[in-house]
Length: 235
Image (cartoon, rainbow, N blue to C red):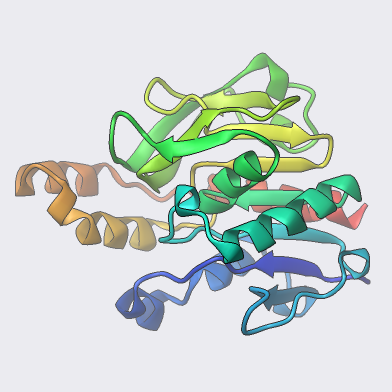
């Protein structure tokens, strides 16, 4: 069986990684799959296998900003354009979601409203009803989010499958086999609460931080999106 590539575009805070693991660990845990079916690489420290030898790709989040560009971002972007051309199943998460948008001709920039953080409510669109991945989501659901940038213009052919008033592009289908989510299906309650704590300098007050922390509930059902993606890859 071909492996699924976890394209590692960054790491979490070192203290969080020590306590909870890193992005790829959370993704694997949420899928419920054996770690052996995944290969983890960034194309710098670890070589990326030829796309033809992969079953699919999951792109991690990152503390980088897509709009900063650079040779590494363009390398990843070209890799994703090649994956789309091959109709290889791809799912981008947060930074990965934005990377796909920019690689395919969209625009990513700072969100005009600033930071979206914590547990948020998302509503799916009509386009999600027949989608192989997003049709598994309920009409409205809660998810975890932390982002400063977002998709400001979709690439040609993309369909919005879920969003909210603050962020209309929380779930996007970029091509028949390419999806992205701005929210974090790999987070658990402890990780989300830790990220809120790390974002304290961006918040107005301790009261605001505490309100965000109190709202965070366990959301194991959101991780089912990653399980669904692995099922689609296996077909």
